[in-house]
Amino acid sequence: MIYGIFERGYAMSLYIRDGSVSELADRLAKMLGKNKTEAVRDALQKRLQALNEEESLPDRIKRVQDKARSAGIFADGFDDKPLMDDLSGGL
Image (cartoon, rainbow, N blue to C red; front, side, top):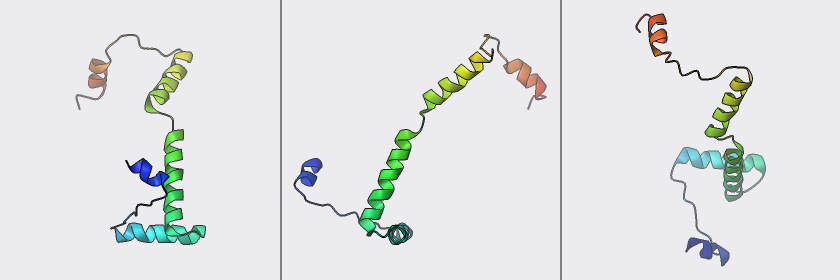
């Protein structure tokens, strides 16, 4: 079990095969005053945190729907496709 390996203090190396990615990690490490491992860890943690803080698509849709509903816009069951096709000139 990998988790157990880390609990016992063993480390696994991360081999970066892409030269440009390795260079980016080196540049970040220098800018942060850290070694490459710490810079990669920091970047990954920040990216994971940013993704966790993003509003999910269902939540964004609900927010837009709630805003539309409060403005008096609601689904009336009318099929707009024929109207839109007519307005677009059949494009």
